[in-house]
Image (cartoon, rainbow, N blue to C red):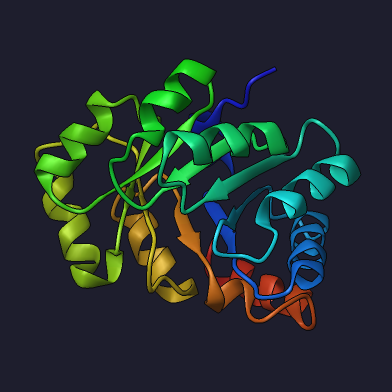
Length: 203
């Protein structure tokens, strides 16, 4: 059954973003995140053997796990993500991958920064809009975009830590994407970082 990405974002509020130069570390991190209650996990294609990491995580976690592939730039990337077992994809911008995702029935979180890009992402079939890089305009930029786009599900990504995440969610973001401040360099200490994150952000 395809992932209802919009409902998952609304329910869980956080997408953990895994990037690593070591595929074993990446896999261990994904498994630790899910075991610790982080339900939405994205593995960036900048990770070594990213698609193999997703495929292995899918084998371990089963069909219900919400595993995504990020930094998807092309239609070919989208197809490979689907083949690896991804249940959603994330793009840094409006790319050819979005049309392919629509054809595949694969929900997509598409990157956008400006009003024109937001419209383009929605027209291309994005399920939600990844506000990226969110750090450029901060919470004020999200608020400015929500004025003309009050019903668009925005997910700020880039420079988001727990305190900023709380502010974005309070300003109307459906969820946030968090990499280094939550994931760190690997699974060591990750459970403690997740626990600290939960103190500030409802996930």
